[in-house]
Amino acid sequence: MARAMAGSTFEDAATYLKGTPTGIVIGGEDPVAAAKTTFDLVEEFANMKVKGGILDSKAINAAQAEALSKMPSKIEIQAGIVGLAMSPASNLIGQFKGPAGKILSQIEKMIEGQEAA
View 1 (cartoon, helix red, strand yellow):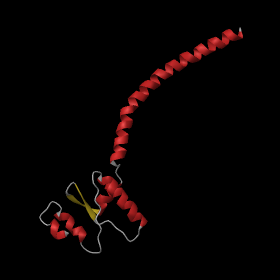
View 2 (tube, rainbow, N blue to C red):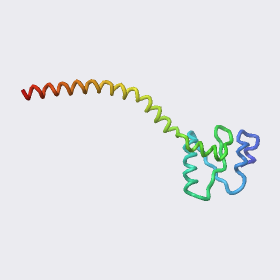
View 3 (cartoon, rainbow, N blue to C red):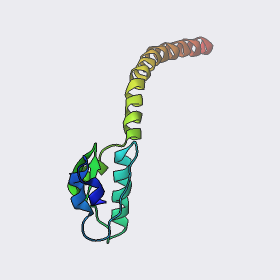
View 4 (cartoon, helix red, strand yellow):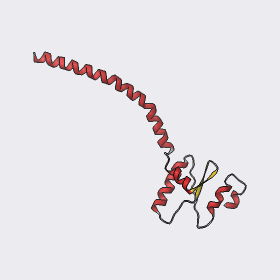
């Protein structure tokens, strides 16, 4: 594998392939999800460790890979954006509900007062 990486943008990561048996995790579109899953497995199996990785065609060390695993995933970021986008609408609805609720309670008091009389 290291020989295949020679001369490519991944050449720096070849140093992580030396030594004990080495596994490779391919992350696809969401490198954070792959890093999270990998570090979850590392916690579960004491004899596993992360040596390094590749992010955006650049080698990263184990500490950087662990930091990547602690970042929010693509789905979490998308959910946050949707939440922020919906927040003004929720606030606007709350602004309409507040005064309407006050008016409704005043009308109910008036009706109760008329029924009591």
